Image (cartoon, rainbow, N blue to C red; front, top):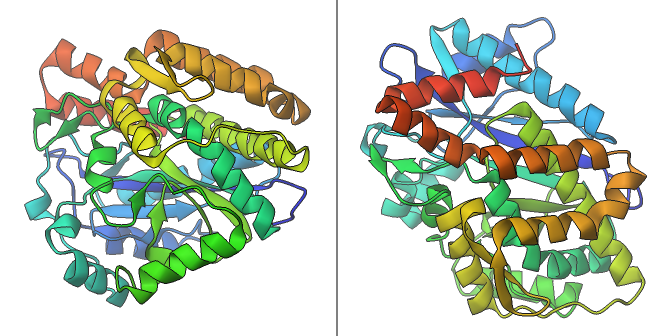
Amino acid sequence: MADTGFTIGVEEEYQIINVQTRELASQSSKLVDANQQDEQPQELLYEMHRCQVEIATGICHTLDDVRQELVGARRAAIVAAQENGLAIAAAGTHPFSHWKDQQTTPKDRYRKLREDLQQLIRELIIFGCHVHVGIANKEAAVEVVNRSRQWLPALLTLTANSPFWLGNETGYQSYRTELWCRLPTAGPPPQFKNYAHYQSTVQQLIDTHITDDPTKIYWDIRLSERFPTVEFRVADVCGTLDEAVMYAGIVRALAQTCHQDFENGKPYPEVQPKLLKAAMWQAARYGTEGELIDFSVTKSVAAPELIRTLLRYICPALERHGDWTFVSQQVENILSQGNSAQRQQQIYQAKGSYQAVVDYLVEQTRRGVI
């Protein structure tokens, strides 16, 4: 990915659903095998548990590219599922399936993670969305990480999509975040002096046996070990195609704006880790309905206000790519109609059935795809 192109790559993790019971189905091998038999397969990938399947787009230069790639990927997963009497849903957690019933994918990496992290991995039946932005210069990439940290809670509120867990209303809009952040290397990254400081921090975690591999450092924003990109890992998997494309556009514009500010030597607030962690809890708990911290003044503001502040901040980058109208309209739709978590809650309140919520998620995942 080119340094100046700010290209985009998206990874999404999907739930595999038993269409009779609406429970999770540990059938990833069937989907991967079915997809590989297609004449022009869109690659489906294994993930930690057999009840999930992952996709990864190619290198995208525009949001139209992202949309086209995600349509192909979601369609491939849906078709492979249908061929095996299954369905696909995009949500950060399943509304009622139990972690005890899920199976780990039989690969060495996943066996090692389960051996090391034990109960945390057994319970970690979650589904996220990762967006890569192409920035090859490592010093600039670290600055993008530093400058983007303050916006992590706003990104999470927009994409929160996991209000239920084990057949219960959790009271959180992103309960996936609360499950995920228990891992020793998960959560918001610290602030780094430069790329050498970033490298030394990673090496310390390896030298002290917290982890054995830099790819197992799961900060909400990190430098990719495989690609010349900054990887944003904070979001629940988005319920709809439009939300996923919107999120990719916001992330690319944020990275590009932070990169420009770095080149211009513009100052930025140095957010304390404890305060950022607390703000992430606010975002996961209340989503767009609560308050978030405006770190430029260290003051609580209504979540929609901070989200609109983020939009104004990245507006020039969005306009440069011709993305402003689509992204801003999608954000306003979420603020007026609810994020995916709120919409799940509305379905449950109306129908009193977690199975109905799963049916809704399956329909949302298909919207604009098939």
